[in-house]
Length: 140
Image (tube, rainbow, N blue to C red; front, side, top):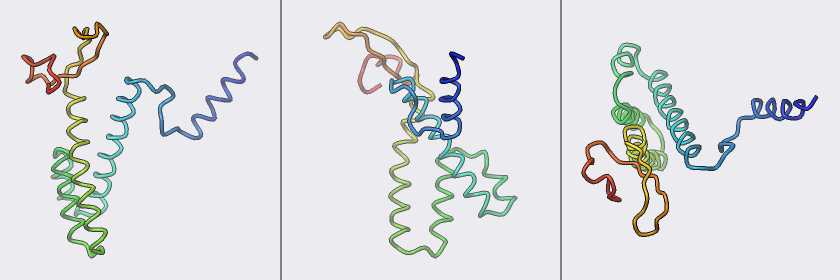
């Protein structure tokens, strides 16, 4: 009987997935970010699959996300959407670029736990492998 309340809570969670993770710490934030980026990638693929000939979609389905998003932008521009929607979509594509760069930094970066020499507090850094000599730099 002790578990019945938590069982009900778990079933509620599964019925209505939350937009935010249950915990609001950095590992959850990173995981939530990566999962949401995966949803964005999926939506790009669905858009292309629904609008391109099968042969063309098969050819580009393994392209990098940036290239597939460029193809979505081309397809969107070729449609007769109002100029305001065209401009808003171009702006969205530009904003997604910084999100894509952050996703790649997280996905391909190297996480390090260290101690900040100025504050003596523990810090977590995420460095790019190519910046190995700058691991403690804010630019890495």
